[in-house]
Length: 397
Ligand SMILES: *[C@@H]1O[C@H](CO)[C@@H](O)[C@H](O)[C@H]1NC(C)=O
Ligand SMILES: *[C@@H]1O[C@H](CO)[C@@H](O)[C@H](O)[C@H]1NC(C)=O
Ligand SMILES: *[C@@H]1O[C@H](CO)[C@@H](O)[C@H](O)[C@H]1NC(C)=O
Ligand SMILES: *[C@@H]1O[C@H](CO)[C@@H](O)[C@H](O)[C@H]1NC(C)=O
Image (tube, protein in one colour):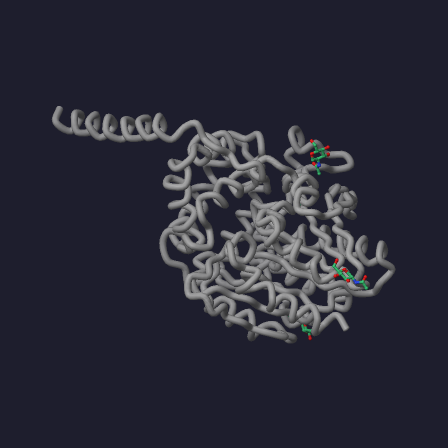
């Protein structure tokens, strides 16, 4: 009896708090940029945006945006998990795309398979065919990157491009370099912003999520859910409900965000939070998340684990082999934040040792530098972009 009333009391306080605060803070003032797509954002910030569609060897239709410049060496930007091309423009006049354009660079920004703008395939329907979502990080590196790179090279009639990838946007280059070594020679320099390969040394809550991985997978399988965070999915509806109301959204969702990415309130202020939440998270496959969880549980940077029987057929080994990082001979620059919870520095030190051609291994000076600051941080044009420029200049000549 007492127990029951305690629960009721708790619920009453909780709901009361929620509704009262919502009454106070709704209506929300949604910033315009939260609702603009890549081309609209680019145009708003003074850029010409040309859209291309690139078809991969296995039939995915990828959107590739070009913001043309007057330099002959193109720069390809790739986004992280649950993110899209939009991410590189969300800071407007101080975003990486606009910054690189100021220095004349020819900028190319991709959305990889499954992400916003690239939920398309020549025969499969992402809403009806679960086979569309049958890809892990491996397929993004193995099929998407070669298609994107070859398209940019042939469009510009050049042999090499430069690249920068945030989070998963750089993981896929290690997959590429290890599985299709001929592509190493097509990259001048790959600038890794928040390098992701080995996934160890975690503390809660990420540690907890990793341990709960199999359970989460089981629940999603029960719901027959192969797509994660689609723009029309139930998660999206929940995110919109809880995260977009002004003030409440930052308090409720900002907390969850910072506890995963690392606290850096100065670089990720409420106004920017409401822009970001209009674009992130976007869709990917459950299999991508599962691949990362496998890597975390395995300890090594390994291929997708299909289970003993199928592993034997695919890899000639019961367990998934590690990607051969010695074969990733392209020049790589590693930029890492001290407060990056998604990516503890120890993992990047190990990557630094495993890669044969590291041009720079830089721990960012700013103590609070977290996993999302690279792209969403307020002062990246001061803290980070000059280093990117330095790398591009050094390897573009
Ligand atoms: C962006 O929005 C405009 C206006 O709705 C639309 O014409 C354009 O096709 C959109 N671009 C992309 C890449 O979705
Ligand atoms: C290239 O573009 C940049 C930025 O738009 C401009 O400052 C520079 O003068 C241009 N260079 C040439 C050679 O046109
Ligand atoms: C998913 O892809 C894997 C690897 O390419 C393939 O072996 C498997 O048959 C596919 N699964 C389904 C259900 O088609
Ligand atoms: C890994 O790649 C290096 C460089 O290409 C090669 O010498 C080595 O034999 C490879 N290791 C394995 C296990 O395939």
